[in-house]
Length: 225
Image (spheres, rainbow, N blue to C red):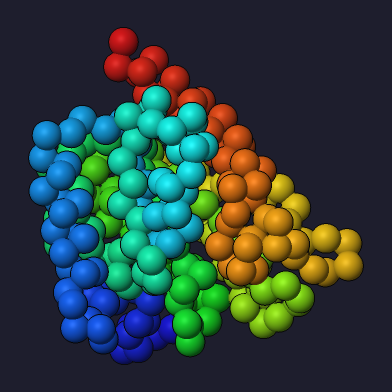
């Protein structure tokens, strides 16, 4: 992509309020306000897969003890997370780790555009939170059967695996425990609508992420001591 071309996935953009109730902006502003008196060690930011995680017991079991905040918004794409960050969503806090999980909702964008959007998020976090480690979660497969979006998400992960080692303070984790069966299908027991994780799906997905966060927090605390 030449400098003259603008990547929509890497251009900070607020969500269009198609419903007319202002919920997205209200939630963004609530995240900023609610964080003023918080001292989180970990912040999760991303789309509905982040938001829904907060509703399950595994959040309270694994991530609440890490003093984690959840800034997930349903339907967000990379450009929306970029806008939220640019508009100060992290301005009142200094987390040790920021977990980024976004990209599957980037409809109409190529794998290269999505990966560049995620890279732009990481670089903005580097600027705003230079002390923080950034964990980029790989995109999950989607759809009951093989489909172009599943292929695109896999390509995004391949691009990120190559790019992330070159980014400051960044770690890539593909925590997919094997949601795609040998026949190419995904079970509704893991993804109830073949996109969002069920309780069982999160229980399979989260342990690897939890182990990584404990390891990174241990490194952060060792540096501080």
